[in-house]
Each structure stands twice: as C-alpha cells, then as structure tokens.
Length: 220
Length: 123
Image 1: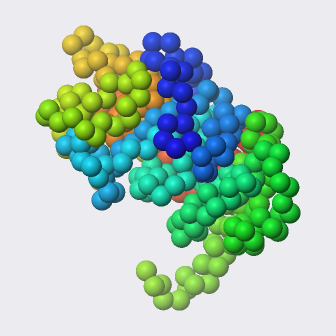
Image 2: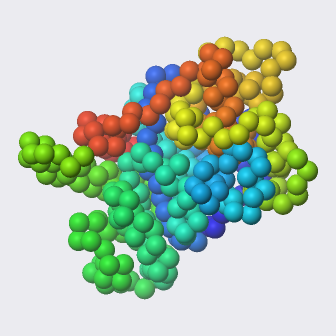
Image 3: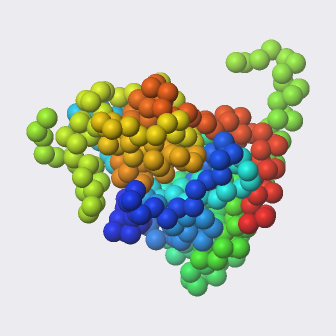
C-alpha cells in the first residue's frame, strides 16, 4: 500500500503485547526489504513467514535526506513520512531476521540509506498486471548495488512467460526471477532463500574478482 | 511551538503531534549522524524502571527485558523511528540499556549468509 500498510486499529499497545520475546542470546539483527507497488502483496508475504503479526511504524525525512529528530522540520513542507510494515523470523540462537515491507515509489527512497542500509538484500514483489510499478525500484536497487530477486506474486492474472517478464522489466540475466504465492508460507520462504542464495553467490563472485585487484594499486 | 501542519502519520490512535515529540526529546535537535542505533539494533534493559522516570523511558525498559529491536520499540510505543532513537540514546548514555548492534560485515560474510540459509530452510 501507499503509506499506511496495515490497519492501525489492529496495532498492539505496550499493555497487551502478544509478541513472543526474542531469546536472551539474540545479538544480531538482519534485514531483508520487500518492495513493491500498491497491492503487490508485501504485507501478505511478510505475514506469511513472520513469527509476529506484522507491525507498522514510520519515519520522517526531510528532502535533504535527514531524519527528522528535529521537530521543527516535522512541520516543514519538505518533510515526508513513510510508513512501513515489518515482521520477524528467529533464525537461530543469535540471528534474528527482520522483514520490512516498504512502498516502492520515489519518495520512499529518501529513507533507504537511513533505514535499510546493511540489508542482506531486497525482494521486488511484482504483480504482472502492473509491471511498471516495479521499474523504479529495480532501477534504484541496481544503482545501489543491493542484491535483489524479483518475485512474481501469483494473483491469477495473465500467465506471462518468465522471459516476457524479464524483457518487460529489462532484468539483468543474473537477477533471479521467481514465482510465488505470497499467502503461502512455504512459497514466501522459498523467495527469501532464493534471495540469500543470490546474495551469497554475488558476494563470492565479487570477492573472487577483487582478490587479484588487491595486489595492484588500489583505486581507493 | 504552535504550528499546525505537517503532522506525521495522522493515524487513529496516534498522538504524535510535533509538540508531543518536542516534549519527549526535550526539544533536542537531530541526533542522526552519530546516533548509533540501527533499525535492528537489539536493545536490552539493564535496570528496572524507577519512579519519576519519563514514561517513555520506563516503557522502553519494560519492553526490553528481553532483547528488542529498535523498530519494535518504535512500533509498540507508536513513535517515529527517529524519536525512538533519541530516547534510546538517552538510556544508553545513562547505562540503563545496552545495545547489540548488527554485525556490519554480516551482509557479505559467507558464514552469516549460510547461517541465514540454514535458519530459513528450517522454518
């Protein structure tokens, strides 16, 4: 959805907080971001794999890209507020994965560096009836160098061949395109696995590519 | 501090007018550049709430009896992330919470990525 992605009336207050607590040994938070257009199923995907009911929060930024901790800027017409949903998955005794569902449109990207820096990668969730909703997000992720996969959420719409979707999105051949049903836990889980495998392969490649370069004069 | 417009959010049940946010943070300006908290930094309370403590600080200490991510604190307290980080920085400076920051190398660390894969496959 656009800015408010879950029903705030369902949000939980501190008094009646049903979230299962994390283990006392948890010490490493990890991030994966799910981006997509309005109604692409971001919250559905997060919900299907999360151990908590998705929660919603928000951040406010100025056009200059500074987070608004300064209240004077909250009233600034140039401030933009973006809401996002998230869920969590306890992976093991130490690692906890947070999944963020975030709108893909332009104003959201003011927040990227602030909120999602250090993300393992991104899932671009696409609805084949509205592929053009994803162009902007794909372009930004490519420029940012963030590993991502494209997940085509099955809405029962026209069944395009994968190559047709790749062509329409002008996807790099290295970027995985996977099919999913965001409502199904196993399907969403496979999307996340595809992303992390892709990230692992990509970093291994870039590491291999860097090793010989390190013996030469570094441009840095 | 009596401006009207630009209220963030405007969601039912929220009371995050700029004036309230000003009060919460003591009117401090942005702490963004050197604020150490990430969205997924896990916060752990190091003491119980004490009488007279700012209510949001007390609420954070109750929430963070077990490790709790910054973004969960923000969502449960219904505060913007930036304001939550200011409050957490206060508590950290006072030694009332500790912070377990995400490992910066995790993104490219094949061992961590493998741990993530194992965790996901075991879901």
